[in-house]
Image (cartoon, rainbow, N blue to C red; front, side, top):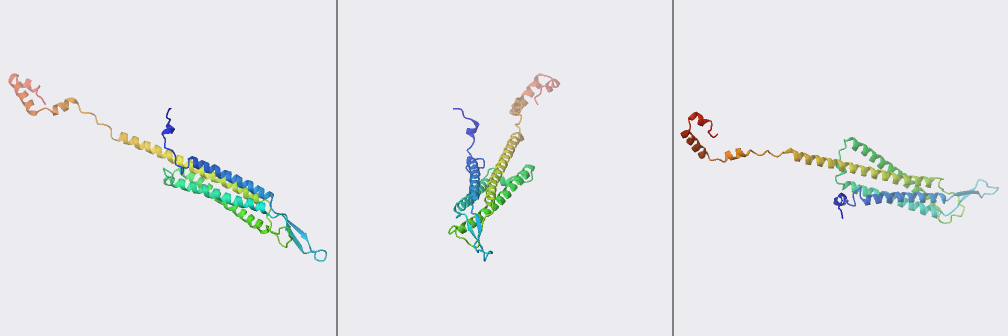
Length: 262
């Protein structure tokens, strides 16, 4: 069986942004947001309506009472489920991203903030982070207000009363749209962080290759000395003098000087 380059690469940890765990949590967050949106639509369709009636008769026409159209249990359960589900999705996604960013290698916290790409991604991440929490906060406040209203007439909801609190039309729908927007913005924040991590890894890889190349060419190998130089350096000085004296005894002096050993 052939071994590919992907088999030799180390497996990514679960806290890595590009791991399967990060992708799974992002998809799960979007599904939870979609589920919260559906719950809000159900709550909007089944919300309690208020009917006003005149009970004063002909003598006291100013007296009027109101009654609810239902107990509000279904919208209450839907709103409570959407409230808890959206909060769970936000806490889960942002906690994972916080852990992944703090344990990223190379660290995203040590990235050069003055580079153009770093500034662009920083602004994108800031935009997604702020808008995500704004949409999340508004959606939770709307759902919390709906919970307070729908839970006020669980018992004796059919009896007329002098005052009735009701939810305006479209409140649940607005909360559902904001919940869906929240999870998509959170996904955008995750993708921005993932893009930043890949850019940091590319910069670290290029820097490592440059350092390796500079270390390789910083000290080039020395050229070997000629063989005759090493041979002459190892000769005995006494033997050179004996050879010169032998030549002087046989040949004339001017002729011998040209053959003297250096």
